[in-house]
Image 1: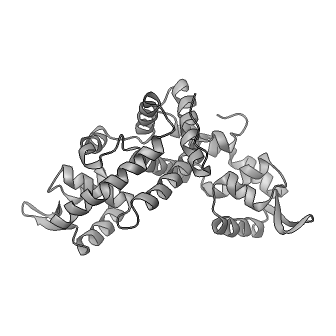
Image 2 (image 1 turned 120 degrees about the vertical axis):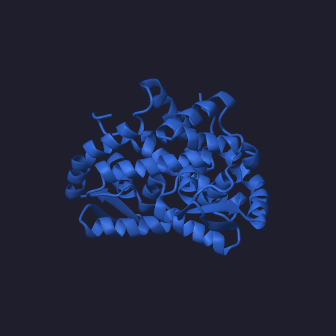
Length: 300
């Protein structure tokens, strides 16, 4: 992946980000806002390991220490989790589900199952297994963490924990981007510049679709890129309501400068997979990502 730049449609990092967006949309539709996906993961981990300490639950749910501490505080205040000091080690906090927490997990689990089912619906069962195996490797999952989520299947009542693995793979991509490519551009900013490199002069709405950014986010992001002198914006002479965008010389230069770092991100993200698996996971993620367009398609 170090030669010609990847097209956005073939970028595993971009495809994972879109798959995460699809998961977020489905979660909102079928689960609502009572619990976020990370909160649900933490509650499921507690259902599997009652009385586990806070650090362990954070590891099972793939949450960093600060995020986990804030989340547990919220769950305790809502009466979903009971927290106490470990009598054997006052520095540790032991957690259990409250009766209300157990009830809430049971209430939302059918919706969670629908989310997982719809994410995987365009794929056959063998393809689902392929995707799950590749995602678990890309997510650098520790065996115990993955086993914990698999053991929770009766609680999840879902074919696989695909949403969880997509979220963790997205976290890996974010970390890799920070290490190799974040000096000049965020991943969404890079997606916009890459889309313009592929299709110079297209309108702002279309660029947002290519980069998988909503209208408000796209407008703010483009304004920043214009102020930085990386993007040129002008009114469409055929339709004054549309903005046409193009890379400036500085934008083209910066895109070339970050190309090696971006390629390294993609290489590292796919490093746990062999070449055949890399091609296959891009193909399968593309199918899942197309759900964002309302165009489910079967993989070959």
